Length: 534
Image (cartoon, rainbow, N blue to C red; front, side, top):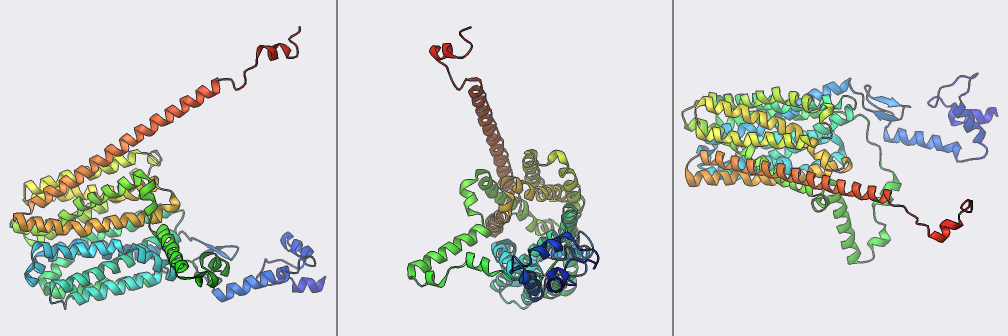
C-alpha cells in the first residue's frame, strides 16, 4: 500500500495538497481504483506532461485559475492596462479616417485630382478597414490578438509613412488600402481581447473602450490641422505614420490571458480529410475544397442567414444605406466650410465638436438603453431608426445654410444621432440572430458596410463634379438615410403585427382543441359503464 501511495498521482506535490494524516476523498477513491484500472497510473502524469509541453502552467501573474488548470477572466488587474491600450488603438484607428477631410483640398492640389478621384482615398481606406474582418478573424484564431495587433500597427504606420513618398493619386490608393487593412487588424482584436479579460465588468469595459473612438474624433482633426499648417501634406503623413506605429506598443501590452494550447489530434482528425479520401481523384479534391470553403464561410460569414432570416437581411441592407448617409457628408464638411469663407481652424473645430458630442452621448446612451426595461425589447429597433432618421434630417440644415452656427448645430445633431445608432447597432443585431452566430453575422454586416463605404464617397464626388456644389451631397445623403430608416421601421412594425396575429391564431386554435373532448362514447358503451345499472 505504501508503494502504491508513493507512485500514485495523488501523492505528487503538484496534485491536490494533503497531509500525511489527512487524505482527501478524491485521492482515496483513486487509490481504491488503482489495482483495477491500470490506465489511471499514467493518465494524470500524461496530462501534466502535456501541460508542461504546451506551457499551460506558465500563466501571467494576473490570471486567476480554477484548480490551477482552467484560466478565467481576471476582471481587473492587468485587464485595466489592456483596456487603456484598447482605447489608444481605437482612437488611432477608427478615429483616424475622420481627418481625411482635413487633407481633402491639399490632396486635390497636390495631385491635380477631381472630387471623384480624391473621394476614393477615403472610400478605399474605410472599406478596407471593414472588409478585412475575415482575414483578421483567421489571424486571431491562429496567432492570437497580440500578434495580430502588432502586425496591424506595422502595416498602418509604414503604409501611412509611405504615402508621403507617393507621386500619383494611384499610389495613394494603394497605401490607403494597406492602411485600412492595418486599421482592421488593430482595432478588431483589441475589442476581442476585452472579452477575454472582463466577464462581470464586460459591459462597463466595452462602454469605456468605445470612448477611444470619440477621443480620436476629437483630437486627431486638430492635430492633423496643426501638422498640415506646419509641415505640409507629406510631412503630416510621415508624422502620422510614426504615430500609428504606437499601435505596436499597445499590442505588445495585450498579453493573452493564457497561452494557447496545442490542438488535439482528435480534433484534427475530425476536421481534416484522411489521405485515402484525398487520393480518390480530382472530383474528391474539388468537393473537399468546396466543403472546406463552405465551412469557412459558415464560420466567418453568415450567408445562410440572408436566405433564412428576413429581419437580418433587411437590417443589413438598410444599415448599409444608413452608413452611407451618415458618413459621406462628414468627408465634405471641411471643404464645404472652407468654400464659404470659414477658416481652416474653425472647420477642424467642427470635427472636434463631433468627437466631444460622441464622448458625452455614447456613455449616457449605453447606460440608459442598458436598463432592464429595454433588454430584449423591440423598442430598441425603433429607437435605432428614430436616431438615424434624425441624423438624415439634419443634413438638410447643413445644405440650407453654410454659416458657422448652422454647421455647428448640424454637427451636434448628427453627433448625437451617430452615438445612439452606434450604441444600438450591436444590440439590435444580437436580438436578430442567435448568439452563437453573432460573429459571423457581424462579419457579413461589416462586408455590407465596406461595400457601401466603397461606393458612396465616389458617387458623392461625381455629384459634386457634375453640379459644382456640395449642398446636393447633403440632400442626397439625407434622402438615403431617411428612406432606409422609414423602411426599416415600417418593416419591423408590420413583421411584429404579423407575428402577433399568428401567435393569437395559434393560441385560439390550441384553446379550441382543449375544449373539444378527445374521446366520444357511444350510447351502448355509456350504458355498459360500471354503475349505470343502478
